[in-house]
Length: 613
Image 1: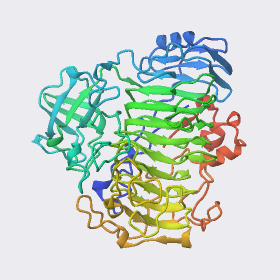
Image 2 (image 1 turned 60 degrees about the vertical axis):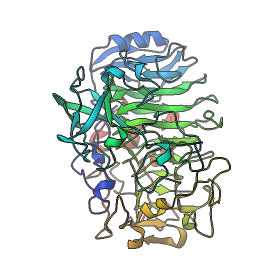
Image 3 (image 1 turned 90 degrees about the horizontal axis):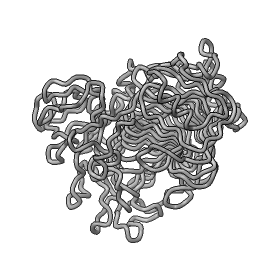
Image 4 (image 1 turned 180 degrees about the vertical axis):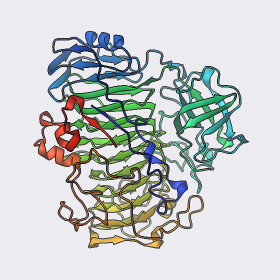
């Protein structure tokens, strides 16, 4: 199953509502121009084939072709390793089951993986130094001195970077990693902009535990190299973050990997396991690759990640289904459906999460990404969408139906994130200390309390029915720190957060209050919108053609009427993904991608289903 990316025609649908410094062009998220639907099959394998045979077929498949898996169960005692670019591994839908009893022979940078997508030329020499995780070899690192020929100036949206020396060995079409050092511990917390994972340093920390993922370089972005002219490198897309957030004082740098895997597609199969692994499907240092129509079954207790994407850009995860997935993490009960780590311009769209402990988590350095139209059937455990590591910024969460969203203080702070037309079914949005300049617009929330600011006389814990819980450093109803952590409430969170047009069941009202728009913020002010009219989307200019014909557009928001979900005054309809879940009787084995999402001209078999804008 292939699909196209979101249309770029509506690059600034948020204009007039969100200030330009607080948003970016989210239409660019996902595989650029759409993932190709490949028709040439280089090899067909049927149940009985081993992991080694599948790996051999993948390695020898010509570029742009497909390794086709037949229906039935493949019992595999080793990992599948995709170590090259431009190949698709495709099944026949949920009737193709990859059942792993071992991850033996996995080729993945960070722990065991059942399907590991990592180029054979990947160089881990840059590990354990900035920008951390997979890193970049020291020989590729250059100082980044400015943009558009201006030293010390780093302008939002710019596409020309100036380096201190020629990037010998960098190829056009390759991926360039940008980063800078976090603010020094002795400079934070402050009233200004900063990225930090400061923990256990003194009486004023940013995080409970800190983070080793970014190695003191949480502010990152990954871009495509378009042209190289001496020391000037032209990139796509431009810089996501607002002018002034990149600074010479933080020593901006760039670097690159030669071993970047791109154009890899995983389509139309189910993956199960009887062995504990860190990751079920992992992408490392990847670009312009995708997962579509895949069913993920956590199975045995233990193991952290369903799909994990590390150090990558413009990836798409769409129209897939996760079954209950628990039993890893620090507390032995936490597991993660989709985790984005240092992922730029990535798209997680139209997926089903059935009883997954933590469905979608945005981690360190993830920027310019979109999480949209995902459905969570929350049964037990943590639930909800989560920002969990330092440095993520300029991301969009749109149109999701989930239990809640929370940005925590476990590992570090985030900023400049937008929540638009989401439906929160149990709680609202919890922005803990130092998660600043969020835009919360047009959401529909089930809550008995509108706002709770840490300084209010009545305080609430993070499990309470509160629409907007702002600035707490504690998970509990406290105006102080959790014992021993020395992370304290942040008054700037509430003052920098934009609230506009949110419907909350408490009182049954939508609030359009100028007083809840941060017009006076010292860094990133937002004018009061001129009207109460909201666009259907902040990243799509029109309804996607994969959208079921009978479905209204948009589905969620204060301007939506006649909604099918009871208790929200008609402001919420069910998502296509929820209809798909219900139509399958809540059973992954009945998951039929083309039956759920393809109408009219797109009603074709799952193995050749194509999603377009």
